Image (cartoon, rainbow over all chains, first blue to last red; front, side, top):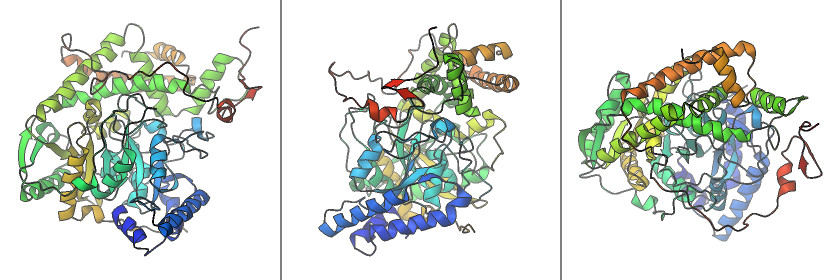
Length: 486
Length: 95
């Protein structure tokens, strides 16, 4: 059952071929057998999961079950889960028991899902390899010596390894799509404002967006249906009707206009990765799509702009961790300043501290205009590049990452080389657009992802375009061979 | 080199981050590299372009100025490192 899609699992539950309790116990057993070497979970909530599965089975008995009832999923440990440790993979929150549920978590619970636990991630979602976690790196289920990507690396790994049927994730500069690509799963980052950020621990508030990691686009449609919608508790939530995503999956792609940004198919893109993406483009041509070149001329400025805006927002957001109201406190502070400085210095890891300092610097007196305001001006140019491109095309297609998964420790020494693994994903967050990463092949046994970018609130179209491809191919159905831990 | 060790110490102080003395040069080196990358922004003249703070240029929603939250102090303070009589405890600030 663990190799099945959410849609297939849901069908089996509704056909009473398996109960939610049996299914949940099966996943919990798999986690015990395999997660020791993958390290994708920070917390497994076994008792709660079984109790919720039993509750789901009662709904099936009464005929009151919905599409997601009884389906075992996992939450990225950035989402607050009431009564359950919510660590954000940081020493700072190692002892933090969330006092309330994130809206996403509550909505999925209302839809009947069973949460198996909380997944590992880069600390405070800052990283592209999952190596910045306080709980240790996550390993790529396809090659244990490789990273799974990040920051939602644990969520990607549990889906790839069959340790959950689906998982939630968050994406600030590629944190859903990049790990999805590196682990061979489908990762959807919705439009900014589509999914509530309430209870999602903030990194960069103008860029963060919750989404899903699943086996297929069809599964992503089911997850988004439950997660999307207006939330008065999130001041940046957009009040717009939520379409029926599953109903929109099967539209013909005849006449669809696909744009290939020439800047995404240039220097830095591994030739084997490009070949996988070109093969996917050939499929789309066969499905009746028209493929044209587009240009996103400010692409090379996306990373510089991001590394001003994201750290600036992070330095403000992370000032709440003060060692006073919640989280880590240093031992025996001599005065208040010592309490703040040592609690934060000892509680945060290196990458988080680096970004907080970067943010504090670009926001400091005398530098604000030169860095922060300048970055926001270029952000407009980057956004306008997409608006211009979407005048001529329906979706934009390209690689999700320049290379397949790299090895653990390979890019850890130099933050800049790590930052460049998000080169194709970062601009999408600056523009607030939805995008999805879909598996399109393997290079040296490691998965390759293709990214589809849509106009604002065009999730239904993206899911349709991804789903039609997955109907023709089976890259998304491949599963890694795992060795059980001793 | 834009940032020397003294500047890094000043930034760490502004951000209330305790950084070990021996780690300062490493942070200085990394921050300078990132600033070098950010320097690429100067390739573009931006005076005439308006800053973009929200991708859809939506203004922050406002709500009526009424109390919407219930008192959950006891519940929230379960996560606090030190509390007494409903108050958060910190080292003495005023002698």
